[in-house]
Length: 106
Image (cartoon, rainbow, N blue to C red; front, side):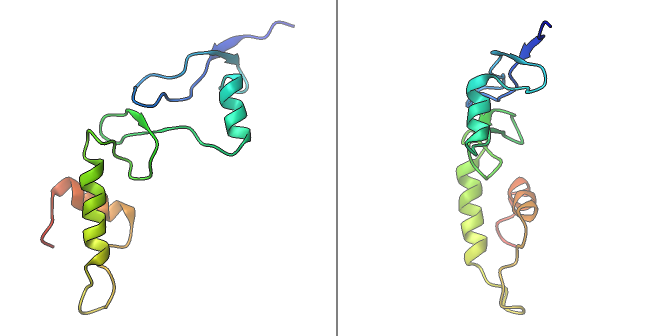
């Protein structure tokens, strides 16, 4: 029985391309990346603006404003709404919406 080989779909860090090493069709990953998955690691995630692979939870690489996003998040985490006594932003989506609008005053 001949096994068909495909290309690994592990996203490269700093690139838009994939690993492209040969892999077995059912796994979708090469042997080294399959071992990483078994050890509990996840692959790089793409940036939501430029789709470059990177490791981080902000969904934005440094070139697209990841540092500015983290600063904005810290700003809103410290800011307290006087009527409720809680921070005004509750979800990651709210942070991204305000970041895209550059809405620092609200």
